Image (cartoon, rainbow, N blue to C red):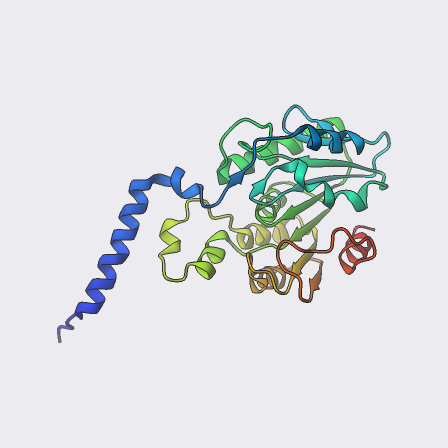
Length: 270
């Protein structure tokens, strides 16, 4: 029996192919403008804040705060907007640690040359880690990834051995985030950079078994809490979570030194 395709189905398929065709005409560079929002203006005030906290430029890769006798190296990967100097708040509770603090910058962001893509972010992170290991050999490394940076941190943890992995507002993949916000579009065919953290984390668990901490606000309006929870549950290695009831994507209590966020984070580190 031959099944006749309805006019509505043909119409929907035509729209789908038209969207994909237009997206291809636009090119991946145009589509990436919906993912990356770099700020290349590192202001005088930004530099003063960095200097006041003893951060200095690390070969224009990012910003580094050295320690003469470090017990750990923290690599911090920020979200998709702004630049690394905007994330000093993540370092505030770590300033008094015997630690090297590195605010990693992405290609095309801040003072770093290049163009942001999934591949350039990954390779920049790997290159930065190798340079840090040259200067601080055999010092344990803890990765901290925020939002998009959680995707970078997950990938890096699948490539090299790290001590701990801290993910803030993470996702399973960028495709899954896109499907949540644009359920009416063929996101799978449109997203040029996928940041498949679930696959990377599975590889981390299989080969490196880093300790994992996931921090996520339950009311996150940008990266659905359900995706962070799913990523956490999928990890087979040692893990802990801090699910912050009522908090969104951009209002996590970094400025409260006694908040559950900082208490649990410091306990996890120690």
